[in-house]
Length: 366
Image (cartoon, rainbow, N blue to C red; front, side, top):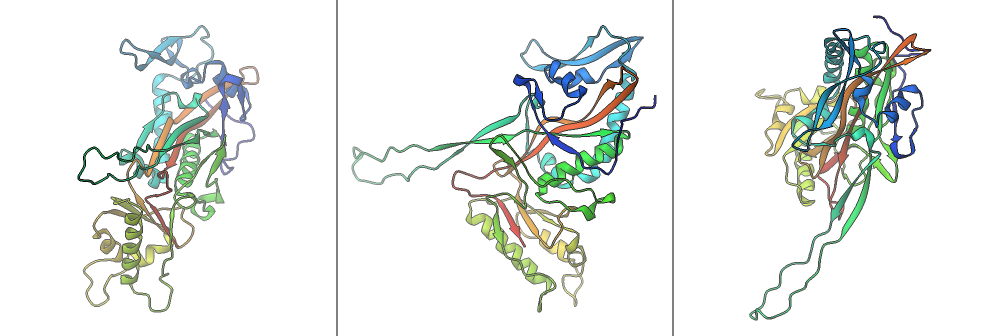
């Protein structure tokens, strides 16, 4: 069945907004936001499907073991569903195909298992976590009765906002691409309109509720390193190898010992894929950097707009992806049921972390 959304522009920026369930308030507005609030922010209520002439939705219910499990629930309105279960699956698969090519840095986090699954994350506006200080060293004495220092660690409480990334859609693949691109730009902490057709530019950070979502290039506690650019006088590939070794040393000095992923923008491709030694072409500069102990891979990503190199320790104390809701399509009616609207949305946010003293495993060379 054809459907449309008024005023849709496939190259328009997507939105990052929030809902406050306790106040029945949404910064997004619209009937679909009200429907979510009325259904206690259960996204399944906005994915009705037809089965043998009857309408069902999938709701999360608590099973016998106390865990949340999906369950088909019969609705009393058999006119609000136009898609079958397989239609929803087909629509979701279209979005996944579009999203995968654009989520390289974000995908690395997920594939490394650095994921925090937040149950019903769409119903929450912030997540809180603590940073813990260290304690003093142990005492050494010849007398076991000597009183040692009995200090205790100090904790700080940090807010992390949980906005919804969403896009109205007439084509699932375009909307899925836009949502995926925004997640990628938040992960990298930068935007680059030249990387996308139509010049789409999202946002590189998001602030709400006293907390902030930041990425690799704008994280407040990242380590800054000054690179020698390949256009500088006297530069040779070994110069960049030495720079990366110094970035690794800076991470180790901050008590982060790998393993690391090294990210570069398109600027570096002509240099990374050129011969490492002009007189003995056994490898490229990219291959030589991969030989450094602890370097997992050297990745080119679309959205780094300049000559930066980013070294990231791939552990949960440095970075993880908070997933309150994966990329999903929802449906709602407008104009008295004469128009069906579809929206692609997710709660998928990079959480960059440092310890109580600001030590981080992210090194930004530029």
